[in-house]
Length: 90
Image 1 (cartoon, one colour):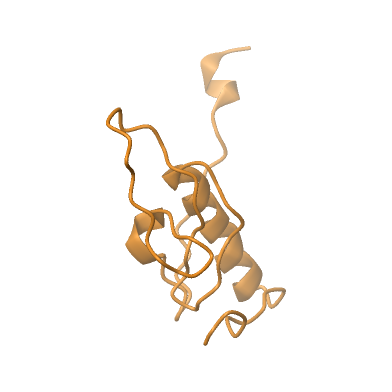
Image 2 (cartoon, rainbow, N blue to C red; image 1 turned 60 degrees about the horizontal axis):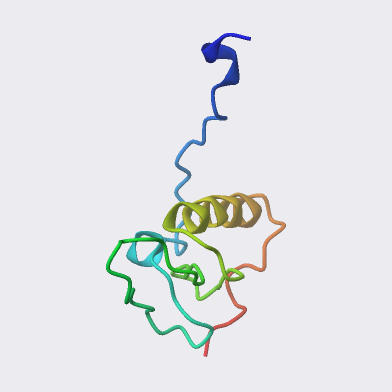
């Protein structure tokens, strides 16, 4: 199989009003406090993704994984299958 046939699926940026990714997918804890890395080697820190609507992901191991979660969250909201962004708001 050629390298071209094994390419990753392409994700297109979808803009959904009120659903921006906070801090480019940097980790947050369950209380919506930013988690900062103590690691000197720059290895990823596990944490939750925070959407502008207040929705939190499950703990994920990298910024990229949190960005993928956010893409899926926006797709579900735009298709009407999402929570509408009201869950998690204080």
